[in-house]
Image: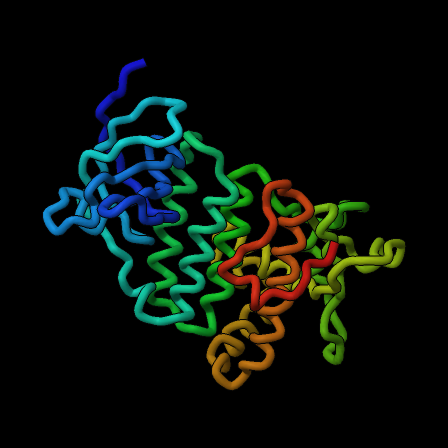
Length: 287
């Protein structure tokens, strides 16, 4: 089969030097999916590829493409968005690296997914600008949405065992002194059990109904609090205004979210073994 000259929008997931002047890179492209490419002479000053193979760079590439070939040839690359802000602060660089590493580990070659490509462009843009206290949640929301697009969706409409609605539980009247009903998130089952069904199992992550709704809104890209009763929405607004004074609570939430997402992915995605970019920060996942 002869090569085709194709033009595609793409994003650099990984790169490494090759020889004295070239570079090999893994790209996620809109039209071709994940592909590996070689840019010959890219490190020379007058290369037509310029900085298009730098990590995080989004560019319009012209590729000599042959399906099934291990390494495609690049003809040119015109940078659209370098995402340079990710390199200016260490914590943004770490999470940006985690995004592209996650995609590289999750995706097979030449399986395009336009929704996933659009999602990664949105999340990198958000990581460049969102405040530090929200970066971890933005990243975890990205993981859950990407997993859902790839067929690994959480089941958070209701109890996995008795089908009790999570929304009904959120609107159930509570004694003012109570924190809220505690459900149990089960990574192995990809969802949660209500307080009654949770008594019959031994392991899982205890979470309030409100926390589960927050996770569900992350998966569905809904505004946080969209499914909460009015009193809870008001309380959520107060929480957002008081974020800076509640850093410890947000830290605990971030740790719980890490455990939940990592455990879910380890259990359901065979090729997922965690991320080197974040490994030093993550506790061991619970199964």
